[in-house]
Image 1 (cartoon, one colour):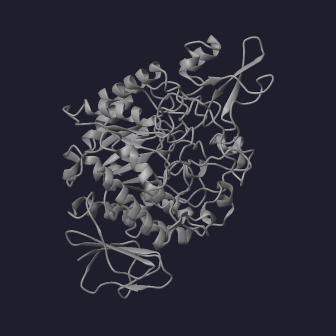
Image 2 (cartoon, helix red, strand yellow):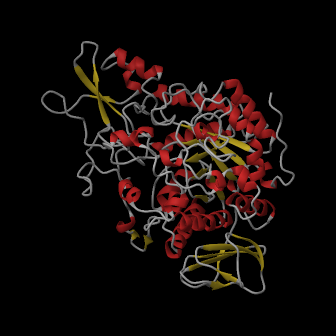
Image 3 (cartoon, helix red, strand yellow):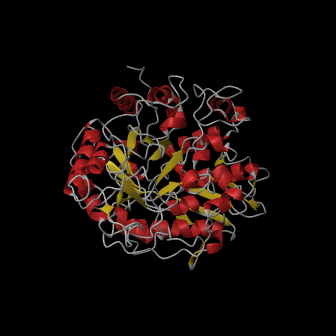
Length: 573
C-alpha cells in the first residue's frame, strides 16, 4: 500500500454534503498521458498515485479518469474489451482499489468513464456475434442489418461516422463471402450496442454496481445522447460543406438525442440512488452530450435523470463578451428550469487546448440572437490550418480560468491546462494515433495534440514523465513543467492554486446565484453575495477598476488600477 496523501486542512464543507457535485471542481486525468510509474512510456495508476500530492496542492475536489479498461487502444481506450478490468499497461484491479482508497483519504471524490454506446470489436460479445451469424441472439446485442441494393452491397443508410467514412462495416463470413453490415458511430473497431436488447441493459446495470461497490463516486457517461437509435434507419440530410450525410445533431436525428436515451438514464439514476445510505453517499453521473441550445441539453439533467452535464457551448464559445454572456445566461436559465447545477469546462481530451484555441484568429463559435454564427462554425481541418499566437492564447486562457471558476456551479480542469500547455500542433505524421487521421484520409490530424504526456520536471524530454513518452513531447517545455512553475508565483500553476484556494474558502463561490453589473459592452462584470465581484476585459482597451474594492487575484498583474485587455480579476467588495 502506498503512503497515504494528507487531505487539505481547508477541505470545503460541501464535499461532505449529498449534493457535493453542485459545487465541485473536478480534474480530468487521461491515464495514458498523466504520469508513468514504471518507465515504459505509458502513464499508469502507480504514476497517478505518485502525483496525488500535485492534485491536493492544486486544490481540486474530485478526479475523473478517462477509460482505464482493457482495450486495444484503437480509440484511446474508448474501445472497451472488458468493462470490469484494468488495462495491463495501466496496472491492475488491485492498484485501482488502492488508488480509490488513496483518493478518498486525500479528501477527494473519484469518477470514471462509462462507455455504453459501443465496445471494442475484441469484446467477447462481439466476437461471439461474428461467429454466430445472421439472426442469432448474439448478433442481437449489436445492430446488424442487411445491405441495400441488388446484392446487398450498399450500406443500410448514408450515415457518416464521427471519425469519417460510413457508420456501417460489412462482415466477411466464415466462407469468405460478404454478408451483413454492423453499425459503428465512431471507428469500425467500435461496434454499437443494441439498447433494445434486455441483455445489454442488464449488463450495464451490473457494470455500474461492480464499480460502485468498489468505491467509485460516479461515472462520466461517454456520448450520453447516443445509445438509443431510430431503428427505422432513415437517411441523414446532406451537409453542403462535405457532400455527405451530416454530422450535425439536429432535432429529430435518428442517432443522437433520440428520446429513448432518457429511459436508460432514469434506470441508471435509480441504481445510483440505491447507494444513498452508503458510507460514500449517493453516486452521481455527468453527461457528455454535445447538444445545443441549452434547453435541449437540460433534458438530460431533469430531477430523475443524470446529475450534471458538460457545458460544451461554454467550451467552444468565442472569446468575446457578447457570446460569452449569451452562453452564461442560456445555461443558467436552462439548468434552473430543471433544478440542475451549471457546469463550466474549457477543455478535455477531445478538444484543442485553450491556449491554442484562444490564440487562433477564430477563437470559437459566436453566439447570436439567431443561434450560432455559421462563419465561426469551422471544420476541424480549417481550424487546424489557422496560425496560433500562443502568447495571446495563454493570456486569454488564464483569464478564462478565473471566469470559469467564478461562475455559479461546478467546474472541470483538463490535465495540463493548469500548466498553461498549448496544443502540440506539429506532431510528426508517423506519431499520430487518433483514428480520425486515417479515417479522414490524412485530412484531419485529430486529437493527439492535446494528449501529449505531461511535463513534470527537468530540462528535456521526458520531463519527469517516466520513460520515452508514447507521444513525443515538444522541445521548450522546461519552463512549463510542474516543478518549474511551483517556484514561480506568476506561473499558470500558481494562478490555479491561488484561485482554487480562494474558491474553497470564499462563501460566495461554488453553486449559487450571480448578478450582472453595469459594464462596457466588451466587459463582463458580475457580483456574487457576499462580497465578490469578477470582471473580465474582452476589449482592446484597458478599463478602470473600482477604487473601493480589494483585488483577490488577477490573471495577469494589474498596473495603475487598470484591467488590461484579455485580463480577469476577482475583487472583494
